[in-house]
Image 1 (cartoon, rainbow, N blue to C red):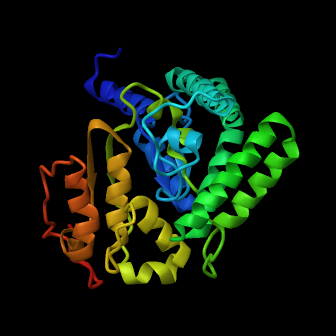
Image 2: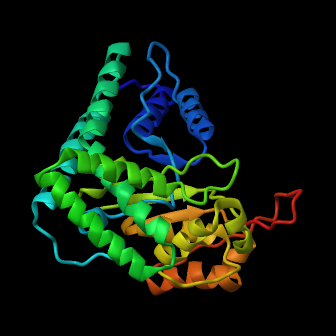
Length: 324
């Protein structure tokens, strides 16, 4: 360890970047810019850029599962009883194996380009272990997404999905391929013209080491989530997307004017470990009307504590939106 304080700070920065940070963005360019920014901050003489592909991912933070049991039970609403079936064992083993590979990756010291290549190999192998689990999660979310607010149709489709998965495990791999294809198709239903295809983020599968530990979830989440008035969500993302947010993020509670940022508050809270913290930038409406009811009030009912809410008086925005 060097004696120079600046050198020590730089070591701390790249250790944190490589072992502690995770990030998601819908925009692939934003993900690449985040990598570049971290590389520049942690730049050190004689040391290659770190490997961040395992930590910074592209996709929709709101679209996807956030608990392993959702996948095992093929349901958004999970039971506390752990299921012990061939399917559940396969899923848990895949997640465990991938988490071990990723743990090795995150603990690797980086000395030269060969270390980066080994990290890339471990990351590729971890993705292979989780390939089937991710496809099944896509199929699950695809069925939930496509049925919108029709809960009886949802239950019927999920039962059919469960039967097909059982057949694919026991008999026919072609059935699994059909399930995978249908999941991909259903996730793109009612995709507005000009929008990029929907890429769900299945949090326990993207970052298994975070969710497989005893006290699962993130220690802290910070971010600047997108804002969009509730009445505009349908036009920008499609009606099925808004129905998905209402049914699965807000647990069925409707609010026609609830801002998109309220759903990010909810999703972020349920990704935290016990006693974890989150800090998000939000529009003023997060504390008003439907956004307050669906967002902050639900968080408080779920055990959250708001210990700081600071208005920002220094930034002048050209739009008519107000920020906190």
